[in-house]
Length: 144
Image 1 (cartoon, rainbow, N blue to C red):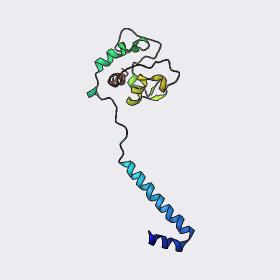
Image 2 (cartoon, rainbow, N blue to C red; image 1 turned 30 degrees about the vertical axis):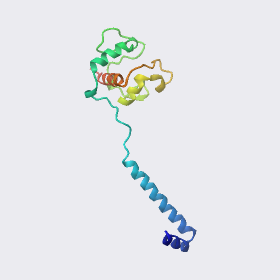
Image 3 (cartoon, rainbow, N blue to C red; image 1 turned 90 degrees about the vertical axis):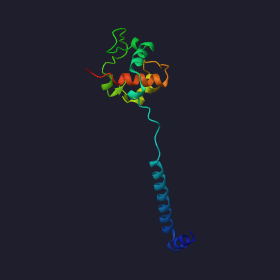
Image 4 (cartoon, helix red, strand yellow; image 1 turned 45 degrees about the horizontal axis):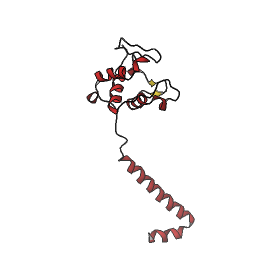
């Protein structure tokens, strides 16, 4: 550092700015490099190995989803207040606003009002496993 200081003294203010810029860029490179090793939040994407579609089919009845929505594989009840969920897995958006992705859908089915204020869909109490099951079930509902 002493050698750097004496060299900087000979260059004046311009040399000091250059030295500071080099040090700042080194810190920036170090910070970016440390982020490369960071892993994001755990992947909570439902997989067929950890879901039970039969249980999910029963859950949409037990949790009251069929009171407002119709499902292609349920003859009764067939609600009409909310949209039909036939072909839901092919839709690009949830509630016309959110990307139809597993993590987003899991949050939406548990607490729709927090994600889409003003929605008629209520918050629905369910466990993480129930939310994974229902999410996988909804995403497999493809257009025929």
